[in-house]
Image 1 (cartoon, helix red, strand yellow):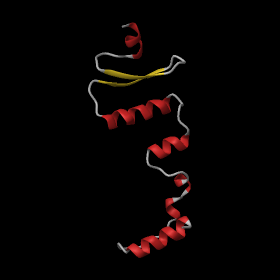
Image 2 (image 1 turned 60 degrees about the vertical axis):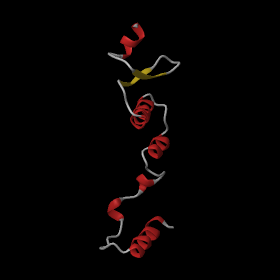
Image 3 (image 1 turned 90 degrees about the horizontal axis):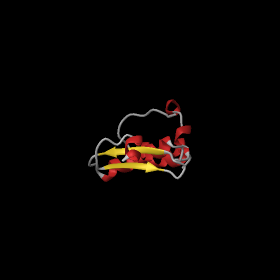
Image 4 (image 1 turned 90 degrees about the vertical axis):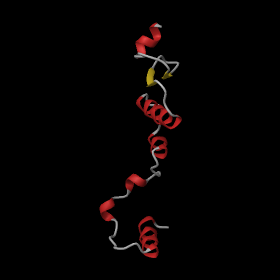
Length: 95
């Protein structure tokens, strides 16, 4: 009805994130897999300022504090030597 038109629903099925404050964010139109719905819900929740930065980072696969590492400061090495990779990681991340 009118509520659907206000949030931009043009066809069904449709999914929206609605808050008690009256804010509404349209998530999807039509059929969609669960993983895409989850991703879109996180995007909508972030857009509505419902997530803390660390919550968003964790969902996106970034560990807390990982943005503090300057990639240019990492030592360079060649090859695929697992022991050397572990040594560099230990030195870099203080394992």
